Amino acid sequence: MAGLQAIATARRLGAVVEAYDVRAAAGEQVRSLGAKFLDVDLGGIDTEDKGGYAKELSEEALNRGRDLIAKTCGYSDVVITTAQVPGRRAPLLIRRDAVENMRPGSVVFDLAAPAGGNCELTQPGETIQVNGVSIYAPLNLPVTVPVHASQLYSRNVSNFLQLIVKNAAVTLNFEDEILSGSCVAHEGKIVNSRVASALNLTTSP
Image 1: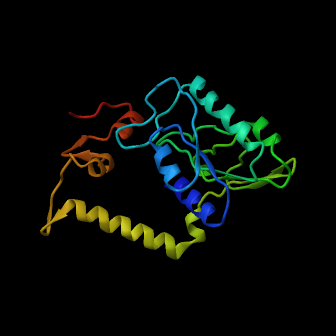
Image 2: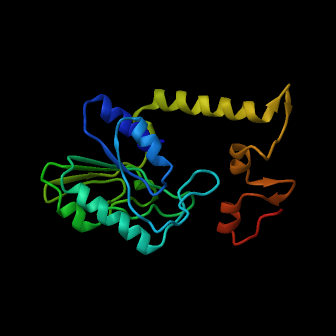
């Protein structure tokens, strides 16, 4: 979502935008915003889980994407990264050589800094310069836009409550992907696969 918002904003400002995502389905969303989608052959592997999040990839698959990103960075003025895998360290997408190949005055904005960052040179919470390239790595970007962040959060909470409260009664429909994906435990049992994996447990059927 952050990546799509960045694309839409950049397009409104008149920028020529290219975007990369390991999920092929994201290509349609990128193109719908008027940006070019950078497609790379990942060998036909499944890159998306049932909740629509990107899966962890093999080092070989990641390197294919990194090579394409490095080439693109060489002629880009601004690079914004948002890739994160829930419960894991953010995937490394921009290698040192990619940053060193960027033109002085270029900018890398690493929105994945709270999870370690997508850039090899990112220092979470710091702004640094490497050969004239600025790398921004904010840790809590929403606090810089408190009103809008609060509005967005309250809307999300309201929409979520409408999923589980029907006619003033709590109704849990676990066939709903949003509800099933956000539920951690039910009736005393772990039902969320990511939480179970973090605790080295198995989910209940």
